[in-house]
Image (cartoon, rainbow, N blue to C red; front, side):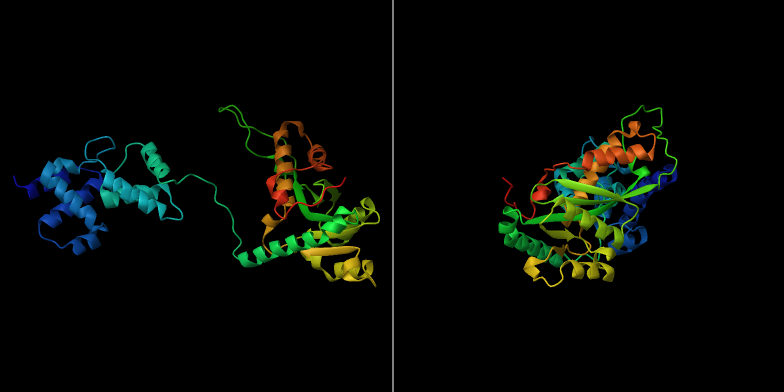
Length: 345
């Protein structure tokens, strides 16, 4: 029996489509078909065809059977390094993509998924959560805004140190009852169920970070709007009598509405810019990472999640949220991204 007949017998006996593809590729090549013709027909690479043809000629038709990691000649060091280099060039990857790559280009199929994971680890590819990115975000503008805020803070240092000016970074948070849901430890044979009557029940909070002292101030409202924004700024003025306020925040519509601009005009009427009672500076659009208050909201919600078992009602959820955030002095690296201000004596 010649080698073509052996390959035909192999094709008739096997049921695995991967083994059949290998066998057909070798048979066609041994019959004199061009590489390109076989590639187009079977959707394989020239390397795939050449590798399996050479293996059959050296080791026999049985070498077409699926082989697994650990057997002799399974994946050469050269091929392994080539795969790692190719993986490092990719921006993203699914496990199935790696499986197809090894099978199609090298004729390799691992018996255990752990072998694929080990290869990915060597290529410094890890399993991670994908992150959202706003396509409207302008990175150049983000950098320019950061530099603008740094310059303003530097120019205000003397007034801040003298207790004449307080800089607040402000943001709004919409706390939902459902925010207490998260990952917790529990028995594998039981669901962790938390009684929630309406997970969309919500409470809006305005939060202001004193960028000098790092103290956080919050106040609850029914919603985020111009009226409540004005009320919150008036509340901050009451907490800082006789001081000018510098507000750094995002571009929410109610931060830029005509009614709010009218309010600022009234507050700062007949004063020079250096004497304004309230000065507003905006972060770059679509760049929430510029505001450290975003991180404070996240820390506060994570705190509430840890005590989900103490939250039989949304009233308790709100109490825990306020307990953690109100008056807290925060200290984490992002708080200093715009520099360090003179501290009160």
